[in-house]
Amino acid sequence: DIQMTQSPSSLSASVGDRVTLTCRSSQRIRNYLNWYQQKPGKAPYLLIYAASRLQSGVPSRFSGSGSGTDFTLTISSLQPEDFGTYYCEESYSNSRVFGQGTKVEIK
Amino acid sequence: QVRLVQSGTEVTKPGASVKVSCQTSGYTFTDYYLHWVRQTPGHGLEWMGRINPNSGATEFAPRFQGRITLTRDTSISTASMDLTSLRSEDTAVYFCARAHLADTGGYFLDYWGQGALITVSS
Image (cartoon, rainbow over all chains, first blue to last red; front, side):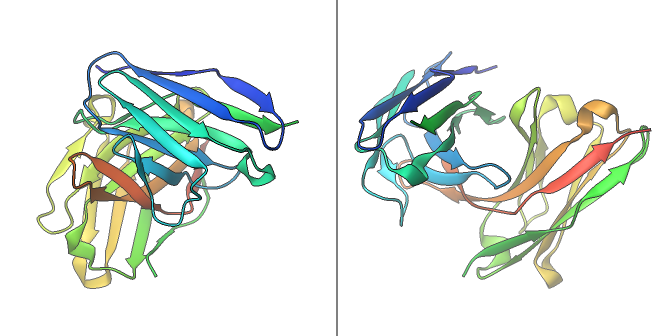
């Protein structure tokens, strides 16, 4: 089975900071990698699909990169509304697997 | 607009079964697979299975095989998930989500239901 590992598990940053989240797959998954943001009590919200494609309506400060086993989600200038937990998800295998999440807090 | 509206919170006992429904609107129901994902404190987000609303074909994560049934009713654009032999570890929020095929390959979950909290407790 594919394992997805996210780092860090949590971070605290200031408004305006550049923030980078990492997701690593235990097997090569081409670009079949999606990123979601989740706020407490809400469903996950799609940010990035196919590793680097920005979902319609998502602010351009979010960007994704990577292929194979190593992927990153970058927030170019952190905003107060960007708090929450961010999950990566592989869609390469028949059983989709999510990472354990990175919790982002605003200082 | 696309909407997925799930049935509500339930409290049930160990050994019982639960059915969660997912009523969709705003798109052609049979054009997109529907996936089921649950969220627990211990295991985070877990993919449970998917259904092709057009054919009814299903696929499940191995750990749920034998306990999960996915169905759909195309006349009311609604999908349902049945989970049997419940145990306390099945206490979770259960989500349905629409899958969209990326033009570069792979699927992503672009619309989600609001989630249904299922509590299993004696």
